Length: 256
Image (tube, rainbow, N blue to C red; front, side):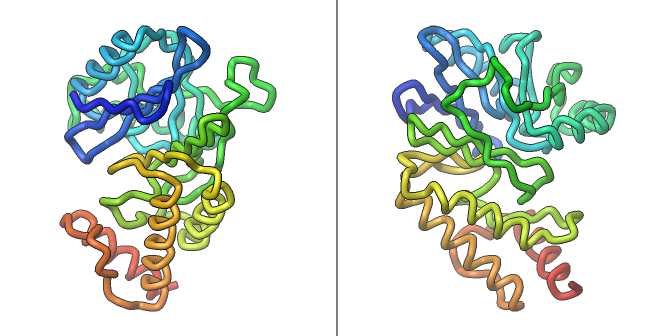
């Protein structure tokens, strides 16, 4: 189990598969919120063990976006725990519950599929929601993406953005995937000077300086994509699936 205490009251679990990060955020003296527990069933066991090790009880969950590896859950984390998400994320997961369960059974068996993807839309004025957490909602990468800005800690839980191991992956079903992504980068840029640490969905966390570096890398990638230049040599497009994704994105830009 790879666990890091990133900040006081912030712990990260990193899975071997896809270097996927789970964030455990302290709430009060004894409780915590778990963000994006992933990825294999054994990883969720490890996250549960981490929560016990730090002497906390899971009282809330958050899903940053509706991709399967960000909507997982287990009874060890608490079958009745409310897992919040943006309204669009929650509605998409509800509409695609059967497809999610079938996918997990086929591609990542062993999960408690009946608990996965069961999300509650976060509404304004929700009394259970910590006042220190602000949702940065956008539609980059996936519809209903919701990063968390934990202002009192200077912590950005960025979702599947600003990765050091993945190029920007666009939601090509959106009418404007590039502008969606640019808008999300702008939203992150607005708080970058206040960021102490940030956590991407996949890859290594970093500080405010590293966040600004990755924002610049992502902008450079998008500019190259739109202009038809080859893949930028920033070291993030080495995996075959990322190269294939880049080709799809380049084809979309060429057509549109």
